[in-house]
Length: 75
Image (cartoon, rainbow, N blue to C red; front, side):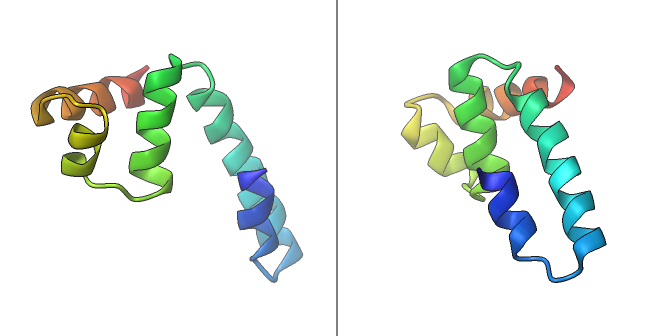
């Protein structure tokens, strides 16, 4: 999983465990969103896509993408 991959890149076992737990919590939260919103949030915050790239990918106005991201983080 993505959580395990990131965690395995951390040399300190305690830090690796803490990162894994944090990533698990994040993935649990993202998993509660609608599938399109999950993809949007992961592309934005995990893959580092810009709002403009997301707007093009989802064929959606830029301000709508910004609103979706903000609401997804609140949810």
